[in-house]
Image 1: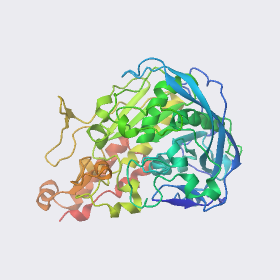
Image 2: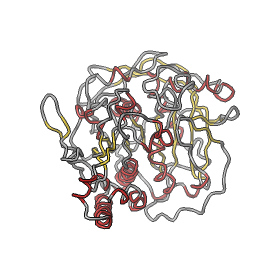
Image 3: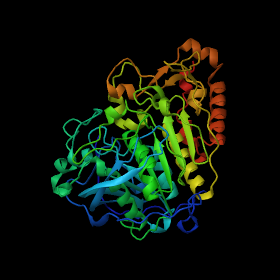
Length: 490
């Protein structure tokens, strides 16, 4: 589960020739109509060194050198403010927050950037690191890293929540986390992280703001000057972004856009000092949509299993607007083989876990959001996964058990297995999030495909449709090709 990596600076490859990448000087957030509010930035003057190196709870270490990237880790220090809600937290997301208490903090910020500053695209993606497994993890980096590095974006990971820094409850037990989950950075490596402290998740939203404010000013970026700053978060971190968008962004106006990935129906709750937010309780809380009366565009990417599973985001499904797009991706799961990396083989959920291309769609989503922010051109509205109405809604499925509607990918439209958000029979929380990939019977494959050549022809055509629709990037054509399974055809 854990990746530790050093801070060496490679020379890196030649500057990117990606014709779609923009220079920092050319970028601007054309969707912004109001300036950022003034406020204190985090102090990022101290670089963290020593101990056993950078800690991040990721099964797959960040392979930065081939991409021409370097990694630096900083202590982020300051005095953060918590918030209280004025009035009810209504389902329309039009919340009003007021500053409440204040407390000092000293947390961790991880920066991955081009070794050659001239390669910087001008875009910074600020990920709210995920703590559901009891340690700081970077699932958005895992999904988006190819898009980030080929365009020359900077990625910043923020240890925004108390659990990642000081330890606390573990919501999902992940393979490989034995002995480390729930301990926090300060206990895992006191030589490197012993000076860190966190006043509680009620202050996490302002900590995130202050770090992003410092990044906007160029702190920790070796002279790079950001043009646009995008907030990103997956799962529990997406729930945090729900609360941030609805209550904090109206006060700070800090971010130029939001990439919300696998949110639940409710936002992360506001809590008192020294407390960790109760995500498990929040999942059963009052649903809320994302407010769309602000400048910053929002792209909400949801997996199939997010709709009616543990997260039940269907309760907060909302229409597209001039500032909101929802992508529901058929045949995908909240976590999958790509996210688990080498740990995927250890899962025993009673059925093969989902191995679909959600990360390919996510990269296209980040590109679409960046284009939206910088040109004003919103992506086309995406079809929704079909759900039967009523008190017990169900996803509508075809004869093979594959969801109908939604964003489509080649292994869903030209299947050799039933990719699904439906889990295997194991009732553990992790298995409930992993979906399934059940091979189709040989007889069914014979009905669908005359031979391997016809299968491959149909698969390649489906890949082109997905790319033309904007749900996969031309640069990821080869990645889509790896999901083809011609050997399954007799």
